Length: 131
Length: 183
Image (cartoon, rainbow over all chains, first blue to last red; front, top):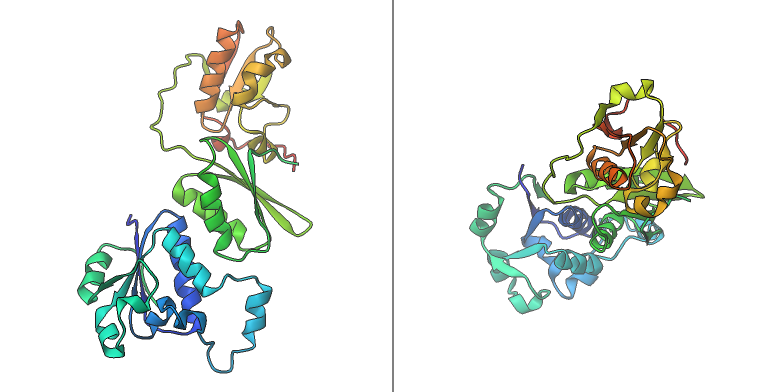
């Protein structure tokens, strides 16, 4: 049985962020090795400013109340927790170049890599998830 | 009230926080100790049971009281299996025809979630200080979950002069007879 979980975060909305970080922190708490590859809009989740202003899908804004009521942790809190649990963050170099971003625009402790970096990790991971 | 070594308050927290908090809390416990997790997240029952089995802890059970879920998990061990040393054993199937005292040496929380009717509860860690509660003249059938703790308890009883002691194998995890609950 593989002890590795590989996640691709490719979308940048608030709902997408919860899917990524809930699975990632739950897996890390279950003593799995977890790596998340952030690409395109997924980079929002670890961007120092953007992570605080993630948007809900159009027309779903009314869920804000539900998030508050359910006492769901904020995305910056989940990011911090994931780091604390040892989850590895890989930011996609190509997307960073396209968007004109540098490592300093992101939370501390991330790694920067390309598609091969992720593929190498994911080759024996189960499951590999894309959000 | 079910006895536990530590309590964790995860009330009001949603998934995955009860699991994340439990992982942190259980690191502070010794192997074999019991953690009580108080949660209001309805998904936490299934999550904690799956989590415990995945990382090698024992999920004992859950009770609900005033909309709060009380989960009980016993910390598992990463130590290798020790060879059982106590020679006098009886098989679980023979227990129904045995006369004497069934001594259940699992933790109080495990006992509360299901034990053989009439069994007496003294957790292994308390046995030495509670020997006065066990009659020397009786035949004593010591049981735990898998036979490991009862093996140690049986040795302890013999060392303290108990002449008729048997370790019941394998243990409650294979027991299919009636059980009594105290929850």
